[in-house]
Image 1 (cartoon, rainbow, N blue to C red):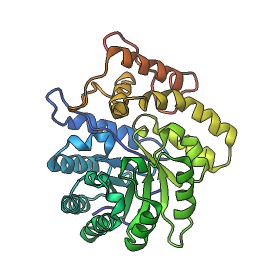
Image 2 (cartoon, one colour):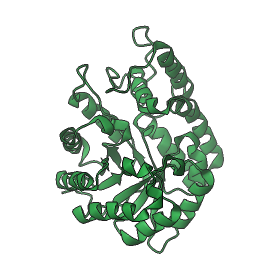
Image 3 (spheres, rainbow, N blue to C red):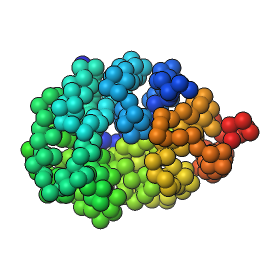
Length: 328
């Protein structure tokens, strides 16, 4: 049972990484340390585990349960934990939801089933039934993950509104529509409902623009590295301090451009390497099909870190970047 029974997703929600050993097994001590470091950032509202950032696609049900359990043990009394629900089948998604509630998660981030990419937008009743099955399995608040429309996994706004109307436990969406006009429309529409639904942006590449549109929070894997900058930016925008927001955003840009450069699937791989450079993780091990980054790309990440956080007025809590030939 979660100690955060009335949790409503909003604010800054970092999605944390999962550390692995050289044999590809879970590295629990390193992951616990990472979780504790992120949870110590003043101003975050919660933390997400078992999401894209933690390579959930490569983790079994048992590993996801273990990650959630030791995450709760490590930081569950400090911040609410959002658990990802990543499954192609609705029954497996419901099983994950029951497990997460039983373990003590405060909310669920529900990924769209991959099978919906093959024309699911033409069958909105399938998305509705998927969410109904999950909602019937748990009393936890749900965060709907809104993908880009071009992926085939994004919900057209008519479907999105039907889902929200039918499933009252949908309290927020993680918006990755990747379309500024649609993003603003979703913010204005969903947060203006009689039962408002919070829009959590995950558009890290244009985060300041997204927040100035009125997004009620952000949920991003980049928070595993720069959660304090995200908090500062969220506050500056909320306070209407545009000049300060621009300065903070300028410090984030080199890193997010490096994180989300092609190929996009290496984004969390790059974040792990940055944690190594920052002295916050011993090694950056990823599970196949992801592969170790080249030395040249790691050197590029080091330069991005130096431009972003390794300066006289670097963000709170971040040590200077470790520069050594053995890591770079």
